[in-house]
Image: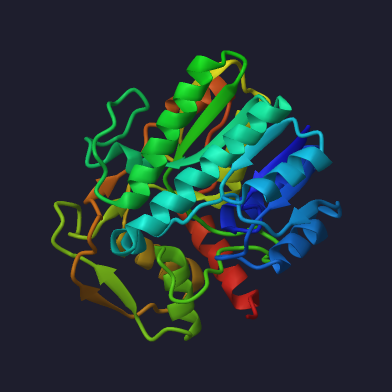
Length: 331
């Protein structure tokens, strides 16, 4: 298939491009590079020894998106592009609503115009709000605690309504949990601009000495050690989940959790990282961040049952691969 990957230069997008190319698909990437670097595209090609086509565009730019669809016979879209920091979304909600919702609608409009009926959407466990764990796809979505989560929930509703109105339009909504790790080559991994919003790159940058210490946001949650619990999934497993969703897509709307089904606290992850890499990660306790919940992990049995997908990598390999990438990474 000819697959358009929006946000394909980003962390999850780049790993998915590798998985797609290795599975024999042709890849076209659209990315505005607001939180990624074009070097990721070069590294994807280096890893796979295959070429892809790259457009530096914003998915909210309707004319630019139309150009891509008119230049290529696209068979399917995997839509990653979007702003993704929970805390930042609370501080600047308008940017999140505009970017994430308009970008999704522009892509859907282009799909309808050019007869593209396979759409895989990068959603998030945040759409469950503060539901009971483990999160199951059949749960009613609660109001999320941050605008980022709301943009994902709204995009899901938009895609569902479009699919209901157009029976040939097939959608796979992937609600994934906390991606960590890196490609085993050490060539691509999570390299956010500025101070990281996600835990693992924060840990790796502290371990490398780029940052003085890790800030742990809250130690008074009702969890095993008071710190937030999340379902950490290796980015390679996540990438394979996207390929499985695209290749197995049938008519209608399909929703899948992509996670390991196991919750790990912040301090448990820090200790695992220290043990896996024999390095110390100094940390301090800070106030809770607005929008965070205590515990979040998946019931991933539906993806196993319907897609034949399951997470294979354990927490130690996630920590080792993340550190290997950080050691190799040069800004």
